[in-house]
Length: 172
Image 1 (cartoon, helix red, strand yellow):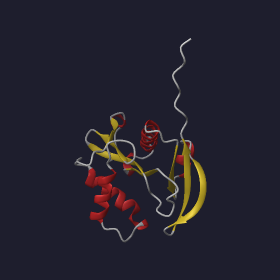
Image 2 (cartoon, helix red, strand yellow):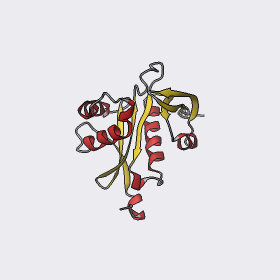
Image 3 (cartoon, rainbow, N blue to C red):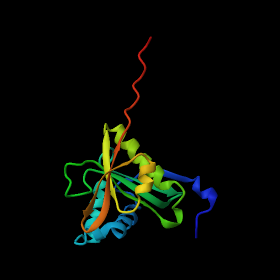
């Protein structure tokens, strides 16, 4: 059942701790969406890795979008998302919104929350790859770095340079 309009305003973003009862659900989302890129990984291994990404701040961090206590989306800030590009770090990863909640700005809010986290921890630029959401990321200030094939899938590697934090004005 699609969410009612009044529910949209109730969506909040939170850091996901490793002890959250939602970790298994989000790990399953990640596994269902992207396991084809790592077919040798089992769900229990994916759950272990996902729980490790639920850091206390900076890299790694996972953020969850909740309507009341129901997860409706997620996004992560991690050190490594494209294993054959160790020169690039950190990464925006696992941006996912439940289909019934798409088109309501939740993915944009999650991306912006990850950007805030990166900026707060001194990160000046970070990366992502996508096979089909280039338009969303361009609208949010990301730029294509290159087109490539990653683990059999054509993807766009993108970069986001974060604007510098405004310095406090000098006293007159």
